[in-house]
Image (cartoon, rainbow, N blue to C red):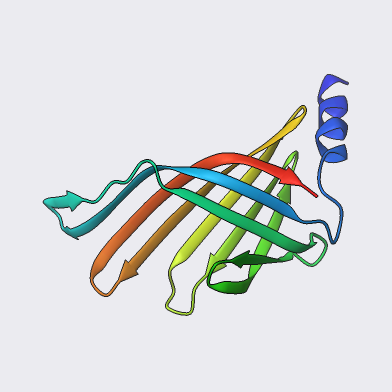
Length: 131
């Protein structure tokens, strides 16, 4: 019974179709791998602003609006959370997961990319707001 009530409570907090979620996240970790022994470039104070718009959970779609324009994402809903997956035109992966806690939403964004032969990995975390 507790499990059912928890599931209902978490689903009740999930954003509705067409809503927008704005996130402000601080960079937790970032580095470039130029070869196996050379890792550098962490900038822990960088801030990332993200907007997820036109949520369509039924069809698993959303739009991410950023400083370089907008892009369509795959959106997945789980109990009390949303996850977004972007596959760039070059095959790089960007993921964002947003989880509900009573009274607040928190998100984690990860970038896993190769720019040429250089691997770039970044992790951000922060608070999100539904509007």
